[in-house]
Image 1: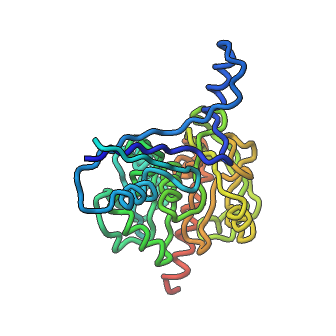
Image 2 (image 1 turned 90 degrees about the horizontal axis):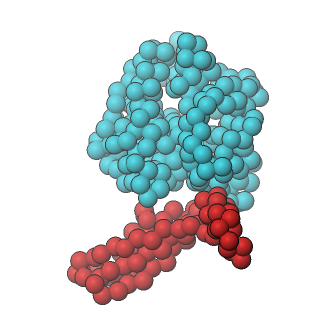
Amino acid sequence: MKKVKVYVTLKESILDPQGSAVKGSLEKIGYGEVADVRIGKFLEVTIADTDRDIDTIVKEMCEKMLANTVIENYRYEIEEA
Amino acid sequence: MKFAVLVFPGSNCDVDMYHAIKDELGEEVEYVWHTATSLDGFDGALVPGGFSYGDYLRCGAMANQSNIMKALKEFAAAGKPVLGVCNGFQILTEAGLLPGALLRNKNLKFMCRPVTLTVENNNTLFTNEYAAGEQINIPIAHGEGNYYCDDETLATLQANKQIVFTYDNNPNGSLENIAGIINEQGNVLGMMPHPERAANEIVGGADGLKLFKSIVKQWREQHVNN
């Protein structure tokens, strides 16, 4: 078994109104030093033992569905589960 | 002319779409469930609004993995008319049938109200019943309708007149006030406003009905011998 941690983030060129709202609230509660907040997604995908190459299948999953590469970037880490 | 209204778990404008075609337009229409694998026998496909798969992951992301999408891609490739409204537009961009993506509204609000659109291109199979530059009132109802594409894609959209509808008062932060775009081949239209909710004066306006009439007009010119 492998545990794959997938991080999906908005590309830098994309505005993140949610992140801006959170930044505003952080400033309001006394964290004026916050320069920027960007919100993304974190997915934990547990994969059963397989003969297929794990890098290949995780990349495929990200490209086909987990991320929309028009607006998002993704990266992942593979750990023993 | 026979239309298919695709239905996904979480679609909620499917009945309005069906009603607009059957009762307002007076054409044949059938629901097609997302597990179906064929659109044989249909002349036009309508992808309705709603919250397919609860908008989990991203709007339209999971609907795009449905069986019916392979058939829809073949249908589009064959040059037949495909209209995606609201969540349907999001599904078409996720499927790569239209360029770009729909982001969260700039003000983070779900907005449900009539808006004024300008018909930027009336030379399409979806807009031939409108005048060039005509202003129309069609309701919006979305939280993620903020159209985005990269500069290169935008230049292509502009050069090919693929921007079909724009907002007069941009409600959601859409690039270039874009409310609806068509593919390069001219047979796939995606738009955030709901023409099916503006198909009879008794519900506040019938400006949307002309869009459906346009599709039928074009189809009759191609398929019916006078």
